[in-house]
Length: 277
Image (cartoon, helix red, strand yellow):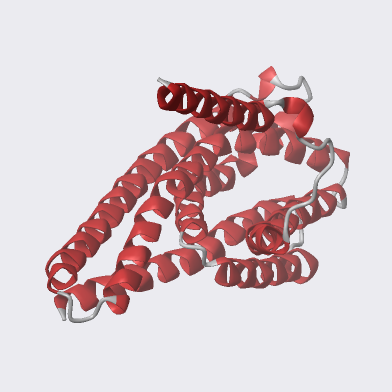
């Protein structure tokens, strides 16, 4: 009985200590109001957020330069540009959603494939690794390609729909935004190029999202640096009227979709060749 009493007392003491530790972990007052991440966490954050900062900065600089250039051609041109940009960004949310989908679902497949390859390298010669690892890696490759194909298909369809509706609004519904006949006429004149920009935007953002998902941030930043240089050169030396501003916007979309598409195609083709070998 004495031993049972001691065991019961020890059990109660252990339970009390466990409850105290759980309360300390869940107690909000135990969490400091201001805290800083450790060096490893901070480095990981900067590697992700740093390149994205320059990407967003490049986009802001590009679209701001277009607006400033449109203002050089008069108030009517600037007003027309602002209305068209509002229509453009309204439909651009579709492309942003597809980019977020790629960034959400692709990293898990890429990360699991990377971990399986690392495990296979660490366990060379193990029967279980050689029999299951490559198969699972191929499955992840196939799933990633299947998901990317579906996103490309969705982006192509949404691009066509955005092009049709966006151009229709700019071409036929200018009176909804203004009663100025000169502004309505200019909107109708520029609407085909806005429609083409909307046609490419969803696919551009889907490919950009897949590059972000693959942690290919260095290539992404380099792409935006090159695109921004070409865009600013187009606006400065080639753009002679307001229509040229939307030529530059269309060129900005074409440069990005070409570079992103080439990168995604190269990575997909190299993965396929490795499986074939």
